[in-house]
Length: 507
Image (cartoon, rainbow, N blue to C red; front, top):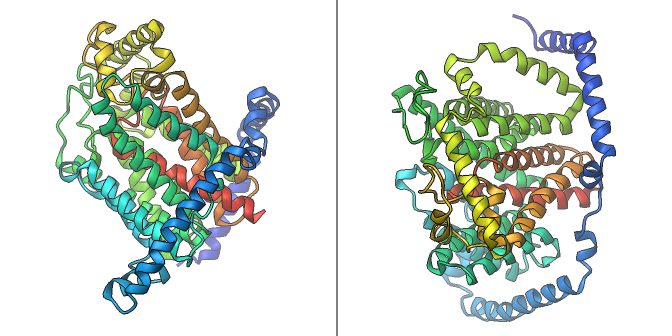
């Protein structure tokens, strides 16, 4: 039996031989040139600089007033909390709450949050109601708020840790409800946005150290494993091809697209795109062999399930995420990863290769459908809706869009593009808000990934990869139309904020 050291030596030797090859050196030289050119460009200087506007904003009058308001709320409810707690000294309620606040593994804020994240994505679509997530978020926020009042944990005692782009986006989102052309539907959609905002704040505030981040990531890995396995089982049992999701003439030999617990293959691909980089980071930094093996299996199943979604935008975005992760974690591996990826293309099944070849083909009904929607949406925006937008949600959008629709796109609940949708619903301020927030997430995690140490570095690489990938999908999909994908985005954004804060403290 070959010993572990011999196997390790073999792979180390193989790695050095690959790195010394002419092909790898040529690819490395090209990548180095591209990297230097990017860093020297205006865009590169924006992305690579360390300081952000938040460094100055936290000392501003705005943040000062907001912090005083928050401290006033804490003091007011703190007095009420202490009086109620004193009246329940020996009660069962007191014992249950003290367990939640003071260290029970089951009734513990970090554990409750991690389990909730798993449940949100593990429940099959047919048994899911988006209001379940709102109830979970509200309940978790109550526990979180009580933890702050108890003084036992340093959670959320200051608002200065909340990023300004995030606060700006919250304000614009809520403002877009007021002037909506369909206020009722906008309020309905706003409930899911508020749920996502709460989860983001909860994740950012609860993940106060590397261990708490790792606990959350372990449950995210479990969610990836369960949903990916579910999707693969769907493929084995058989999924009927849906003409509303696929052009069956151009993809005649393509089987039905798996959707797992998310109800739609594109939604499933977007979820995998967001969570898989964090699962990979957890696997890389896990020391326990069984957990590391489980993480590796979850990543493999996720990649297989992603292929079975036949989501072209998901595939391209995942490629972006892989390249970003490798470039930040160990850029020396980038040439090898690119070369191996190219060599693997001929090994892909014919149905997947044919699907790849339809990318950009306007004869494909889904591609032409998007172009028609974009054309009609641009005409609508030119008519003045770019300034204030129609209002939050599909209800407001569909009151205006049909008058500008062309071709077969008359029934369209959204623009099929993240940034165009924000412009259509929220106006120019909404577009600026989502651009600022998205760029901040990618830029800050990428910058601090190069400065952090230990497992935190892998988490930041995953955050940058996840945010870069989902931003790439946003150019051809409106990823937040399905609320669970929006929740996944803001959960990942919360991890990114927490990891950046810890990296600053680490430095």
